[in-house]
Image 1 (cartoon, rainbow, N blue to C red):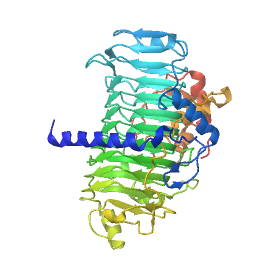
Image 2 (image 1 turned 90 degrees about the horizontal axis):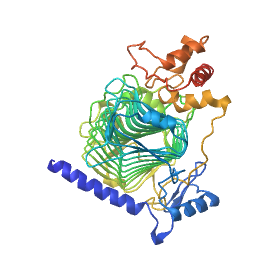
Image 3 (image 1 turned 135 degrees about the vertical axis):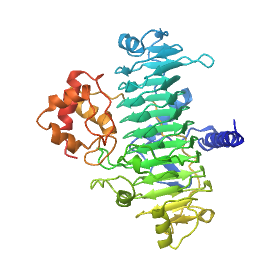
Length: 517
């Protein structure tokens, strides 16, 4: 191990320790936990707090155990063991809700789909040996789940074309202690879920986002190592999320908080990005051409686009060649990146809060667009912080520590830390129950919206294009969902969704053809 790597590990451990310290109240009392309808309470400043009932429930839950065990205790004492040479999927199919499935070390080349509640899928680690899911470069997805109260833990996942672990509209999930290498579009991808933990994972080699939180609430992303991907950690169209104590390096962009236009949920707010090591995110962008992340400039440490109430605190942000922290509105992003403006989404980033961060050697080879805009702002130097576009009620402390442009109108923050907030997690929330009449809508939101916006470009073509092709043929679209073929050179091949039953595929096809935004 090189000396630079050793130093990085030592410093990120220090950041982790700081995260543990700042994430708890003193005096032994429980941290404030907000619900998805509440806001955050910051040290020295309040923007709305959780209800008394939510806080009381959270405190009661924390007395019983760690607040990060959001899936709850095992629902039953039934444990099933899968051995090398056996099928994990067959064990899932045979299992009753609430079963714990232990997967022994070995190689398993399959896709695992969990559509029942309370399944705990645990890869057993013996020394250096793990249960390995190997897609062999041909399979699309490793683990998909639409059930509630799911745990996925302890796997090595590699060589899939689509996703390693994807949550599809399930609540109360825990994804931890997995090693994910080269799994196509996304590494860990919770979509349309409430109350989830993503922690202690190592993810690399991802064409979009190593960890991507989409249209979800009350999420905790902590103690992960993400590298060699286009986006390290992305919080997209989501609320009440904390990203802390992660080691984020050698990506194109480190940590992103976005509103992606054209998605059914139009907001991202109440996001805390704290105590992360965000370094050397200078990898050339190898995302899908024309996609949103495909337009991120290499060398971006933190990027905030149209998200509100974002706190950036206590991070070590170094050696990102374009900029340490960049905030941008949709209208400017449409010129700089691959973004189509959504008239139903607020295009600006408001109430941003930049607190104390350690920043060094950022912006040393920034892009011409930033150089030009800095000169227009009468600023020179290598930018630690660059902001473009309107931003209401934003603030910063100790601005003299940074080379900055575009934030002269930011006020001085009236608080210095978020120590009153441990996390936004709750006791297990009500499981999502999908009624027959909303099956198509939930499948669309939980699966399709991860790659398709209504009229902008994401991983897949816009919904409007799909509607033009299949408007009078929902059965044809349902068949394509099960067995897609590559039709266009300018988009990657769509992963097949044949794990969905025929009725669900038709329902989602009919819903997709009916949406108007």
